[in-house]
Amino acid sequence: MLTKSSKALLASVCLHGLVIGGYCVLVNYEPPVKLTPPSIQVTLAKLGTPRDKTLLPRVEKKSTSPLDMLKKRFGKASNEGQEQGSALGSSLTSELASSYELQVLEILRSNYEIPRIISDREAKSLALWVRLWIAANGDLLRIKIQQASNNSRFDQAVLEGAHKIPSFGAPPLQLARKYRTEGLLIQFCPLECS
Amino acid sequence: MKRILLFCLFTSLALAQLKVEKARFRPFEIAVLGNPELAGIIQNDLDLSGVFKTTLPAVAEGIVKIENKSGQINITANSKKFSYRAPLSRKLAHQISNDIYQFFTGEPGFFTSSIVASNKAKQIILMDFDGENQRPVTLNKSINILPVLAPDGKEILFTSYVNKNPDLFSIKPDSTGLKIISNRPGLNSGAAFSPNGTQIALTLSYEGKSDIYLADRNGQNLKRLTSGLSLNTSPSFSPDGTQIAFVSNRSGNPQIYMMQVDGSNIKRITLQGKYNQAPKWSPLGDLIVFTGRDEDNIFDIFLADTKSGQITRVTQDQGNNEEASFAPNGRMIIFSSTRNGSRDLFVSNLDGTFQKQITRGSDYWTPNYGTRPL
Image (tube, rainbow over all chains, first blue to last red; front, side, top):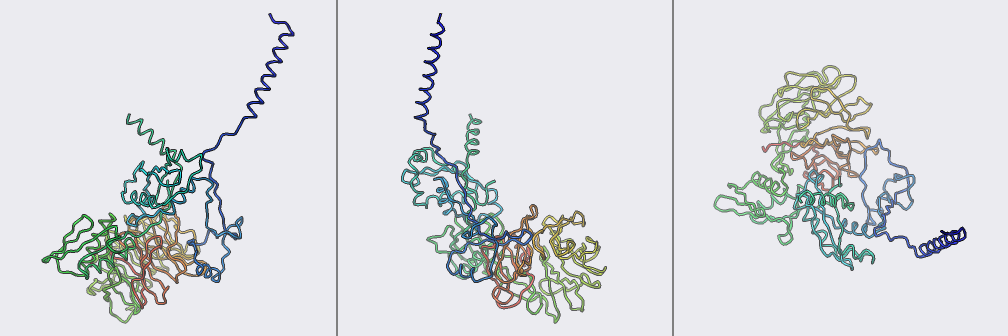
């Protein structure tokens, strides 16, 4: 049977133990590394007045050549844009990749061409899933169809486009193993994925 | 076991969040080898479709070989073989193009279809789908406009002022068999054939204002479909024949509407723009092409999705573009454009990324494709 003073001593030892233990844990604590940080999408929209929705739509065209830009500059002035946009904006939406995966998607997108023998109407329903593995130096190690689209020309065009890519750029060190062994599962749709 | 595998596959697919969308469409590169005369016409046909681009065999994705042996023309498209009987002709070349197109795309070609239009002299003319082989149908000194070909290709309806009033006439493609379909007082125009060719929808104004009527192909058994105070014009049948698209100013300005073929259930299609006209229904039923006047008072070609009402623009910043109609396979449209000075005919794919001029140097109006070879 413990005396009152023994109980107090025991309680004190336990409390001190908890405090010291908690300190040790907190001192060595490091937040877990997020392997796939969430992507950040940024829209660099042109400053101006939004297009009146009652008007017929206009096709937004990328004008990249200096001649096109001059034509645009000296052509009819347009104040169409977004009220919250930027004076430097182009009214075209751009995505800034904050993660390696977005970088990979952007590179795939730049090589994403399919033959027009696939009609727009058929294109609406096509979807292809592929898994691709990336080496530590960014080279494409392997690409494999996970689920075909039932249109061999579409599937072939996607694979050919991916094989044309010289490099995806080296992945971050902590992700290299994941992309080399697990790979990335990616869905390709000619128009928009449902 | 199978269920587990399916579940795993489904789960892994459901987890997939990485998507690559909105591919760039490029022409399919094809080489046509053999008889230069025949190959030339086929190459031109395929290039004009916007779906193909002819190139050298070394870089082509598809190869077409033409062999002409003792009265028989053999075509090999990749591994598929087609045979035709000589002699060579433009018509045969277009038929071969149709078969090649169908082999590679799985859809019917439209190279044997004819175009009917009115020209600078306000006469009705026919031409091949590529603008070649133009021949007159009417040769009077009056104004002849708004021609449409019957689905069976045996008849053309058009409006003529030959009797000093806009009356509706019928004529055969070989310029014979001219007859009056409707010559009521006022406007008799804007006729459209029903898909099975047994009926026509037309615009008449003999009851005081322009309204849409349904009639037998010969103009008999007239039935009024629209009423009220507004003007209603430019009917176009849906491919299943159950609905009609038309123009009405019932909202204050011309807009595209559709209704059941009995005149019921009227629904507005275009909610954007203040001046939309000349609707033509796609043979595939999902789209209506129309001419819209934008805020700069320029006419351009637009497409309206019949289900969602979403409008997309086909032409922009290239003169005035008007009076579009669909090719029989629904993948191309034809319209008149002033982009190069005179009013000429152009073909375009549905997103406007491929547009090509097919006539030069004359005024052409209201082009319409026929579905049958003539």
